[in-house]
Image (cartoon, rainbow, N blue to C red):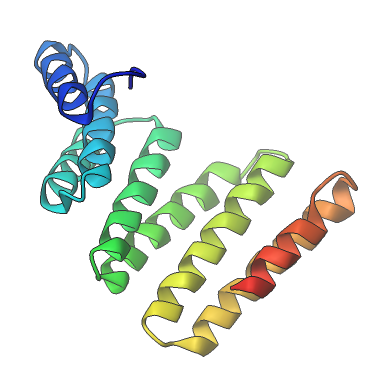
Length: 168
């Protein structure tokens, strides 16, 4: 996204890039950007089309971080458009990828951050659906992850995270 461009010209530029794109990963990134641009314009039908296209392009990819980013954006769009149960499916897919990715890796703050964030996001979906017990369960999971991170690294912003959770 280039500063100074209107959203329309930004979309046109991304469309041109998409036509010239040589790889699935590059195309998936462009589709993700298109989805975000359409979302900013409240054109959710177009945003959903491009996020789905991005996900399709990544189906055989080994780029799990990009897949996580796309799934989270897809979930966010679904939640925004009033479909929290479908959004949950995307967020659970993110959790599954994260669980598979963490085996064999040492737990760092960024991993705790990602788990904390996805648990809160799942909790928010359950809140939207008025499943308060499930929402509370996922908020608690997020808090547990934050406490674990703080035990390993006293620099972890535990109090800030607790405040965010209590505000939800």
